[in-house]
Length: 169
Length: 112
Image (cartoon, rainbow over all chains, first blue to last red; front, side, top):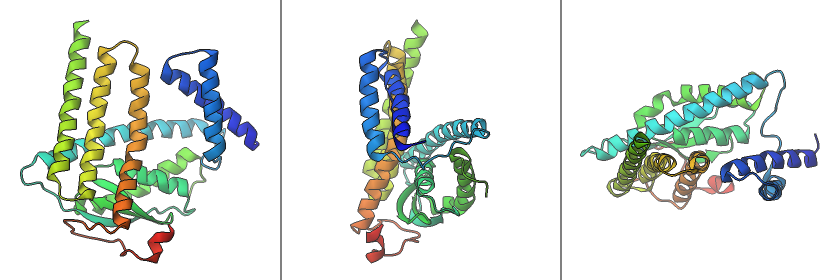
């Protein structure tokens, strides 16, 4: 699939999303979404991000849905966690910065970025800095919560690789 | 449809309460890094509540509210990370630190 085909097909997808968001289905609306979408994808789009494998596509989509639902649960949990700490008169916390390896054998930047995004959503953790795609430096509201962070990252990595259609490691 | 208005108002109050807690956290917590936890996460849930309230109370807002809710989750961690990285690179210290695995600022962090 050539670059132009890729940009045009993504532009079609984006303009459909655009019509959904603006709740206005018309030729003009589609044209606006298509032109702007094509510009954005043409300028910043990379097609290495995800590999679609026809045989595994159902699994990829299933994993994506699970991932999105889990993200929503996590952000709700983390909001309540921070709210509980803020409302406590004693302000219980033991902040610090912890290094967490991405554990990714390919050291893929997309996976590192998505992992950092997922970590920032989990309760009391916030990605501060990267060392390439190898190590993430996480600010934790409670340093003790970082004890299980490596296992969580391993599970997260597995799911992200499944979504993006990377080879099983 | 009274139940819809009731639910909408409840969601609205829930959202406003969480936004308030977010601001309270901004004031109570000691430094940039901890404050980012309050401003980012708590206010995301607050805005979700307000969006849900709007979707229930007003006609035809649902698709836009849904899209905004998704964009918020996508974008908020990026903003928090950008602010935290900027603070760290310009040498803002943690007010309270129980552990710091990060190497001190030197030529290595500049290249990334």
